[in-house]
Image (cartoon, rainbow, N blue to C red; front, side, top):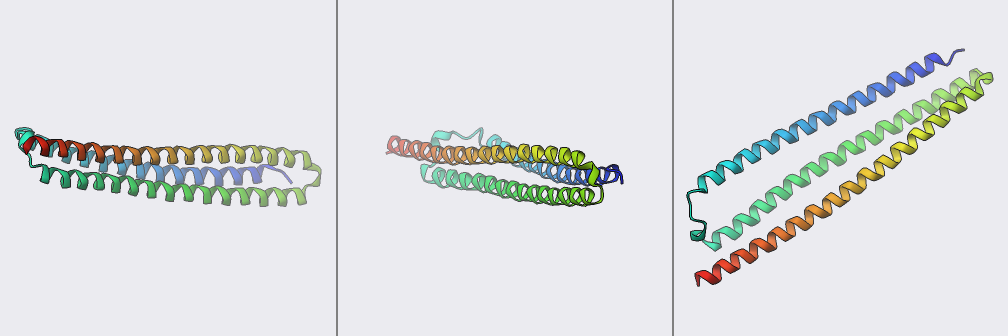
Length: 176
């Protein structure tokens, strides 16, 4: 029995999984880009409408809640995108596990039916193990990037809120 049908099956299965995942990721990224452009256009229109307004005449009492609402709004957008990323990461991990089980089962089946190809089966198992190690390391690195990004977003949001509060307080002092 030849190894070729098993490898072709594994290759096709792997390629299909990658294509599905790539399509899902492209869809999410495209949607996120459209959403971002929409919100940026909205903000630009708000800023252009206020461009003629003297910012020093804005009431500090009105500015602070508006700033807090905007921070909460953008934090919500970030949370939504983080949840989507997490869901797609889980999907990818599940597909990887299914593929890994399929490869293992196919190799077991092939090894049982073709005992004289032990070296080929061992080589494929070694390649699969190396690929799994690469996937695991890449997954760990991606999770670290997400953690760092989340911490950075939290720090930036807090710093922006503090700066806005300080600016409003300073404006109140000048107005008083």
